[in-house]
Structures are given as structure tokens and as C-alpha cells.
Image 1: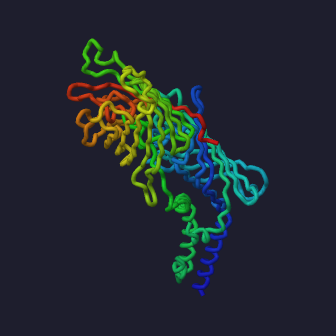
Image 2 (image 1 turned 90 degrees about the vertical axis):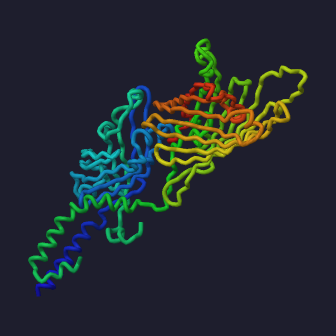
Length: 196
Length: 305
């Protein structure tokens, strides 16, 4: 008698697990991250449209990853310097973030309009990982999850040196903007089964 | 995993499932990023190797690099007199030859340029095309190949009325295949099979067609300073007997918007038609020209739409 009961419990547990995950993960591989900095001498503006991100509404977790070489600058030389001298993208090809968001429940999210959340997690850039706290917004738009955040990153925090000679041309901090439109992932099992 | 739940003891089964349920969020935290990375791995992806050389020139030679699309580069190339010219000539600093040029990237692969040097009042125009680009990833391309063609015309007035010369006799051509490989972030090497065709030469013994093999390298010393060298070996012939192989040694120094190239070379001319077949400086006699190249890039068309 005991055995079938525990089996029943296990099945129940598995069902509840999949129920928690199903329809709650949202994914994109073409998210946008841009950054901007301004000095009296020169504005720096770069955009990356190869951002992969996954958000799990069930657990409040999110992760994203972007190829550093994917940033496109106004000036070709700037882009070369960014990869060669500042971010050293051969050595550190990816920037990643992993964390969770708080301040939102499913019922609130169902309401139209952007909803403010607090995102806390680890940003890894140029081989340095730092814990950051970022205000962001989430919104469901026609079944897609739209996420946006704007925050400031200080290059010195991530071991990015700016030589003395160009210190006036390059700002110490840059404003980073994240814009993601994520499509729902059918279910964990389906995603695991599909090859890519 | 399901076999775990066939435990005969209900308590243990409950405990186990409870533990697993508790463990799941912490486990998934790191897995979410790993899952994401797994899903974004593209095994067919190839990435172009960028910045094989800092500038569009190594020293005398052109490099495989071109200004990117919409970028206009203005280059000032300068050679002082020879170091062995003595204190009276301030060791060469009293003399100067100069080449000014513009290079423009029509696309990320195709560039055109014009230049003017004060040796023989020579104008030159050239086309550079990145035929192959070194890549990493699936089926990588081991080298970059840039094709280079240039025409140069001297506009110095004819002084000898006895010799009849037409405009065509003022024109020389240079053809090169620039083959380079970036072996590591610091080390890049280039090979340059070269043909110089001269429409007019002073006497029958001189060659109209001069063949040479060039080689160049760049070794980074720090993030912003690199050691550079280039060399042209003249294939055996009349030119090789009467002239010397051009050698250059120098440093690339990168600042914000500029690349400064400081160098020592036995060649005075800065276009292919001069430094490949007409170098006469003997390094061992001290016929060494100190020189520099300054490149300034202007963005004509932004890469951002």
C-alpha cells in the first residue's frame, strides 16, 4: 500500500513541477543592449542586437548573455579599440548576467502597462563579476514578455582601464539600456527535446 | 530518477521529494544561464578576425587592413634625410619627403585611395579589396588576403628635350597580393608577392617588370604599442643587382583617434614604385631614414543606422 502511495506523491510532485515551469519561461536571442556615454569632446554610442535572454516568471529568475564583439559603433576605429584595448573581447568574448527579479506577482503582470520590478544579480563583464541592483520593467504584450532596464556601469568597476591620454574623450561611466521582447517557451520538456 | 520514488518507506520518499523541491531553485539559478548558453551555441558560426594590423600600412608596405565602410583615413607619411648625413644636416632632420593620402572605405572590404608624394611630384591612386578574411569557428579561413593595385604618375617637367616622352611613359603600376595571418592577439605576419610594372625605364638593361616578395610583421608589446617590420626581397635580376632590398623597422603607437607609426628604413619613397624597385640606401653605411606615419580617421557615414 505504501509503495503506490509514494509513487502517486512523486507523480503529483513532478506534475506540480512541470506546471510551475510550463508557459512561464520567455526567451529571446535577438534582444537589444545599447550603451551611451557623453563627454564634451565625444559621444560614444554602441548597439548590440544579438542578446540572448531567458526570464522565468515562475521562479523570478533571469539570465542573459551577449557576444561583446556584437556591439556596433558609429566609428569603425572606436569599435576596434573597444574590442582590442578596452573589453579585450578575444579574452572575454561574452558578457553575462544572472539574477532574479522581485516585486511582481502573476496577477499584477496580467494587467496592461509596464510594471516596475527590482532586479538583483551578478553582471560579468571583462572577466569581472559584480553584484548589481537595477530597476526594470516587465510587461506582457500580446503573449510576449517585454522587458526594459536602464542602469549605469562604471568601467573602473570591471577593470577596464582608460589611458591618461584619452581620459577626456571617454566618460568614466556609461548608461546601459536593455530592451528585450521575449517569446514564451512552450514548456521545459519541449525545449529540452528540440535540438536548438 | 523516477526509480528513487519506488522507495518502500513513505517517509524517505517524502523527505527526498521535499529536499529535491527545495534544492530546485538554487540549482536552476546557475542552470538558467547554462541552458541559455547551450541554446545559443551555433556550431556553424564563423567570426572574422579583426585588427590584424593597426593601420592600413605596416611601414612602407600596405597591410591587409582597409578603412571600414564610411571611414575616411587621412595619412601623413614622412621621411627625414639619412641619419649619416651629419650634424650640418642635423642628422637628416633638415630634409623631408612627404606623402599625403586619403583612403576611403566604400564597403567593409573595398577601399580606394589617392596620394601625392613630393618625389618626382608623383600622384598615385589605388584600389584595395579584401578578397578573403581570416575567420575562427566552423571551417575557419586560415589567412586574410587583400588584393592591391596601384597606378602612379610622375608630373615632374621633362628637362631633356632630346628624349621624346609621352604621358604613358610617366605611369608605373604596382600589383600585390597581401596574405596575412593573425597568429595570436599579439602577433600578425604578412607575405606580399609583388609586381611593379614600369612603362618607361631609362635604359634597356633596366627591367620594366620587377618582381619581389615582401614580408611584414606586427608584434604587440603592450596593449597600445607594437613592434613592426617589413621587408621586400627583389627577385634576382638587373634591379636586384643595382638596388637594395627595402627594410623597415618601427613602432605603432595608438592613441585615441590616431595611430602614430615611427620607423627607421633604408627606403625614401613611400609608394610601391619607389620603395620596391628603387631603394638605394645601404643600412650598413647608415643610409637610414627616420620617418613617421600619422593616420587620422574621419567617420563620413555612421555604422549605426
